[in-house]
Length: 185
Ligand code: XMP
Ligand code: MG
Image (cartoon, rainbow, N blue to C red):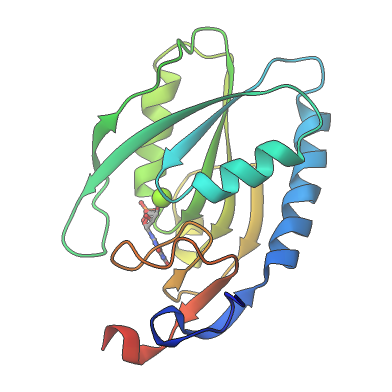
């Protein structure tokens, strides 16, 4: 099945990044990460659910040992706007004391969720906390969040696929795209 353009309910308005483009960019980030963390242990922390695909592909692009752990957080707020007030739904199993932590995200929009997460993880005594995100929207640049690894800076549109959802759908698309208006109008 061609997942980029298929029947009705999987239809995208526009493909922003193909599977190949995503793979290539993650390989580039992986080389940087290998260089930056040479000789250090590394714990990847994925943020559920959106980061599942990024985590799987980034981790397998790394030619070194890593550990992986997961957090699930929910951001209080109305509709699609995140408020920065965050609740932990699933915490890490790993003790962060002395660990080099790399948060793996699908997308940073306002950056509110992430800045809360960084503060939370930094309070647990890690050796370092950095961020890798596949996508970043322009609004994120207004927040004081330093993101070390960014896959792509994207326009301010709602995107789905490759882990990202609209009402829990489209996460399993291999590409990233914007939705046809008829899907949500
Ligand atoms: P912040 O706090 O950075 O929130 O505003 C980031 C979270 O918001 C969701 N988000 C999106 N999800 N397509 C999606 O499927 C989008 O275009 C989008 N923009 C933001 C996502 O859950 C992310 O973790
Ligand atoms: Mg997310």
